[in-house]
Length: 114
Length: 114
Image (cartoon, rainbow over all chains, first blue to last red; front, side, top):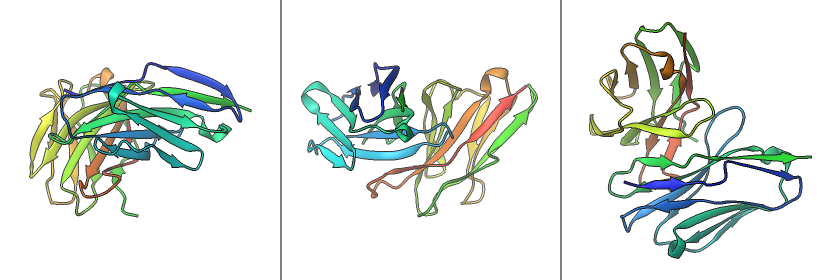
């Protein structure tokens, strides 16, 4: 069964700092998908990115970037020049191609102070 | 953009009562899911549903829980006899494997058992 570990329970930064949220995963499948979701205080799950296991290219979207390293089973998320609106809980998740159901990490609560 | 709709947004029920949480997935999606998030904790997989039957369920999804797709559009989660520990946010999701995003989550139903 797949497993996702987000070792950082809480992170606090000051606005404009860069911050990296760690995600380590375990799976026996060779085909799988990795996700990041943002959960703001309002509670909904906001999709940020999906990555498949065959695409190790790093991705940048504005202030967000993702570093996928199969060699270390990690899919880390970096926010550059953080803003107060980035304050939220961020979840990393994994789904295996064989069963499609997605399993979440425990989440990292990010607080960005002005 | 198509949405997954969940109703009600908040439900309060007495311990021991039956409750039905409703979801309308995106119409051309084939896989449906329920997830649970106890306040302040991780998002936990409950059950997946495909081709009108349960494809996988977690250990949380015991005999008190059931799912149904009664009319081809709604997807319901029933809790037969609610306990205090069932208080949580329940998220419905549907999946189109062909889409980049993959999973689309509803905005959740907050269930409070008193």
